[in-house]
Each structure stands twice: as C-alpha cells, then as structure tokens.
Amino acid sequence: MYDNTFLEGLMIRYYPNLKLLLRITARILRFSHPEFRDNDRLSPVEVEFALRKYLQHIQSKHFPNEISRLQRNLEVQRSSSLHQLRPFLDENGLVRVGGRLQHAELSYDSTHQILLPRHSILTSLILVNEHHEQFHCGPQLLLASSRKRYWILRGCSASRKVCRDCVMCNRSRPTRMIQQMGQLPADRLKPQPPFVTTGVDYAGPVNIIGRKTRAAVPSKGYIALFVCLGTKAVHLEAVSDLSASAFLAAFTRFVSRYGVPCKMYSDNATNLRSAAKILRGENDKPQQWPLGRVLQVFSGTDGLVRVVSVKTANGIFRRDIRKLRRFPLDSDEYVPYRRVI
Ligand SMILES: [Zn+2]
Image 1 (tube, rainbow, N blue to C red):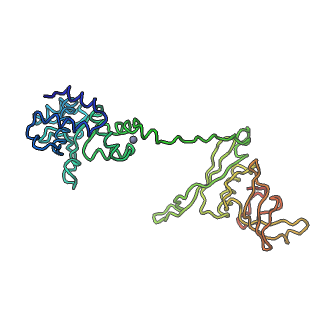
Image 2 (cartoon, helix red, strand yellow):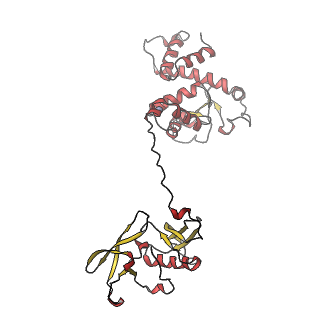
Image 3 (cartoon, rainbow, N blue to C red):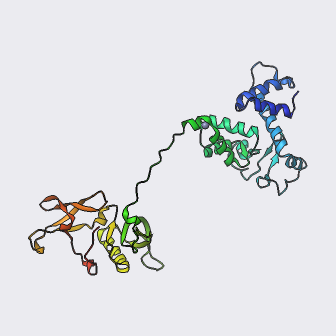
C-alpha cells in the first residue's frame, strides 16, 4: 500500500504540520491494518503507530550499517557517529540511546531516547512542532525539550536553525538600536609621555592575602587601575578598602614610580574625591581656614572639574576648586602637594 517514497512525499506535502501529517498517515494505514477500523475516530495508538513508521523509515535510511550490525547482536563500528551513545534496538526495531541512565527515575523515552539524524525532514518536523508547542522558545529550551524523547545528532545546530528560520520569531524580534559613539577627547589623541594624563577606577572586590603563612586568612580588597589615556598603559595597585586614605596610599605609590600626572580623570567616586578638604579664605591665615567635606563636583563640557559643593560647619557652599586645600593626613608625608582629582 505504501513504500518509502510514498512516506517521503507525504512528509514534504504536509511540512511543517506534524500533527496533520500523522493523522492523515494513520487514516491511510487503516487500509492495511483492519484492526484499527473499529472506531471512526482516530485513537492515540494509531497516531503513535504512524509516527513509528516514519521513525523506522528515517532510521533505516540514515543508519543502515548500524541497524544491520545491531540486528546481528554486534556493537556498532568505532567510526560510526553513534558509537559513543551505545545504541540498541528496541522491540519495535527503533535505534535508541543506551546511555548510563538506566537506574534514573525517568520514563523509558527520556532514559533511552530515539536516535534521529541531523539532516532529515522528520527531524525538522519534530523540532518545528516542539518549537510551536513550547510557545516559540529559544534553541536551548527547544533542544532540552526535544531530548525528552529524541536524541538528535548535532542537535544544537539543528535547534538553532529551526529558531532562526521561524517566521513568527523573526517578526517579533525587535531591531536593536545601535549607539553611535562620540568623538574621542583630545587627551586620547595627543602624543605624550606615559601617564601624563591618567584615568583611575576601582576593580573588585577581590580576596587579598596579606602574608604568606599557612593560617593566612584572605580579606576583601580592591584593585586601583591607573590607565594612561595617551598610550593605554595600565598600572595596578592593591587597595585594602574603599576609604580615601587607602586610595591616597595607592596614589602615592603610583606617583612615586611614574611622577605626578598633569590631569586625572575618575568616575567621581567619593573615595577618589579625597574626603577632607579645607576651604581657603581670601585673607585669613591658614590656621583659620574652615574644615569641610566635598559633597558634589561639577564638571564642565571638557570634563574637567572646576566647581565643587562643600559642606562646612556654617552650611553648604559652592566654591572654585582652586580655593580648596586637602587636609594633610599622617600618611601624607611623601605625597607631592600638587594634585587635582
Ligand atoms: Zn518561533
């Protein structure tokens, strides 16, 4: 009544509707199987029987040598792509994955999946049907879902292709905006010695071990990155915490090696703004300058900070950055005085 060419023609005729294909095939199979003619309505057993016919046809077409060896109770050849999967024939003559999950609490289909080739109409039909049943899922979910019953050779690329070729997924995929990058600042394009213009930022947290002993306990620390804007050279310094004094210690070590930079760029983190400052009075003596804390910095169109907001005992003021002096700390003994951050 039917042969392999007939099955191939049906699959092409009803692609990609697997359910319709199986129902029509089940109706046709009733001619050669009178036991199914008792009821007018199709039963699930008939539909499963039709699917099995397609699976047997595809496997005999793509794995003829493997099936002939398995029928003779021989292992498949080492050169075969199925060798690693330890295949075997079930009672219906389908090639299934042997695997190592025999004692798992899974269904028989999930433990020993039916093997399918990468390139066949039936594989595409099954994947497309699964893709629709999983509400147009992505490739990874599609592959995981299909492996509940089938093991598709090179399944990753097969599931990716199904998702890529789906019209509905393509239509609903939004086109991303592409941000146009701005012009590079002049300091990035000017030839200059290393670290004349420097950017600084923190990376981390990372675990830092202070001493090399057996019972050394790692503590949380950070990495200060000093990046030269002209040459892209990078200098790394270990920092113990996020305090201003820890940053000043790292900055002192950096300056000791490369000299004082002319210009520094940062992301205006509070610890990088050097916490304590002194407001310098116009005519007052240095001993009478009020103590304050920098709350906010205001950068101009060129990215340089010239105005800051400072909180003192008398209130919050906006002042020119040239009127500020950093509060000298105990650890500042060797720090060069000229710094703007
Ligand atoms: Zn889709």
